[in-house]
Image (cartoon, helix red, strand yellow):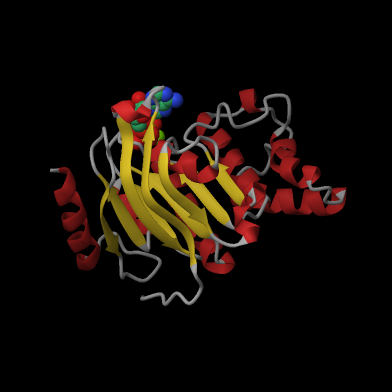
Length: 256
Ligand SMILES: Nc1ncnc2c1ncn2[C@@H]1O[C@H](COP(=O)(O)OP(=O)(O)OP(=O)(O)O)[C@@H](O)[C@H]1O
Ligand SMILES: [Mg+2]
């Protein structure tokens, strides 16, 4: 499947660099000269080894941390607003409010937007069901497992219906079966809603299951996107197909 993009790109990075040291003229770059263009509605994967700077890059895209130099453009007024970017964190522990129940956590953004109670409950319950959390609505985060917390986090972000989804290894802590379910659901949601998804993983199989395009990041420090691959396979992807295997070999060769 080849997607033809008619809209202007959604996100453009040019020569973006990041150093955490006080004086970044002296180097110590985590990211150096990252160039990246992501189209509206695209499902883009950032794939790279642990510690290369994937979370750092995603946090810059979210507006949580500042770049040190270079250009970052998020196109169109609507998506430039932070509320139109939804972030799924690598760990749900700090993302959920411990004093709110599962349902209240999922409803939180809608409540802030003053969505009427009945509508809010309807939307929250839709995503609670989707995330396989029915029956756990009234539990608190410390009463559910790590994988369940991660699913609550995902349900909450989806309930807010952001145009851009920034996902940092969101399924890394899930068991294999739940991960497959969530991957399928994410593809279904993305197909139906035309959201732009930027998804971080270090798992090649996950990258090839989900991405329209995969950007390979080099080993840090001074990491950048060394190559992008367009993955022309229809969804749902068949992980045992010869085509999948061919792509796997090509991508894997970067990490040998
Ligand atoms: N706030 C910070 N201050 C200083 N250094 C940081 C900070 N955040 C990240 N780093 C460093 O930046 C580098 C990249 O970290 P980052 O968390 O972005 O990697 P990652 O690719 O997401 O790794 P993983 O796959 O393990 O999650 C690491 O060397 C890390 O120590
Ligand atoms: Mg990370």
